[in-house]
Image 1 (cartoon, one colour):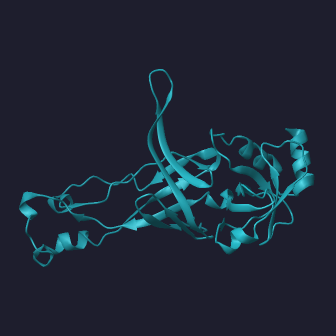
Image 2 (cartoon, rainbow, N blue to C red):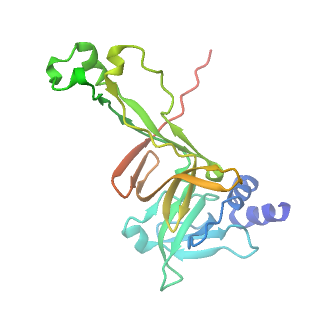
Length: 245
């Protein structure tokens, strides 16, 4: 690890090589995944990406042309020295990348807001919204924040899963959409895979939830994913500013 760290420091000159190498080396290899993983080096721009493959092999940095990928909006994030990258290389031209994701930019709390709907109950059937009590109308305008937190080493945490249980008839009259809870994430052939799994009695990993999405947009504050049945936009939840006492 000391040798790898030294080479990474010389090759890419990033601020914290030890953490980057350890995190990148811990990335799980998924069978059939053709994605190239690496760390961004000095020289990356809108035309080329210069990267060091991970796990580190002792070789010099590689360079790929990303001009066409940029033109087709297939470059997601802006690579800084030391950032983790996921690259899909062109099948016919090994000097060209068809897609690049700065996975470092994915690591954040991504959220969207949802509104409730009326719960299907006999006493509410056929009732017009205008005829509802004001207390229920107010509840229908209360948004909740859903989403997920993508962390290092493929760890994900759901956002929006813990809310106070309904305690009044008015609160029971509305229902919020079901939150899909993800606890793991990885890139597979240039697509984002969000999953939840558990161990069975034989300690074999059993996947409970698995959703795959294409990245449509990734900026410092916005993420847009296209799932099989929908397109979902997210905003980055900003850390609360600390106040001095």
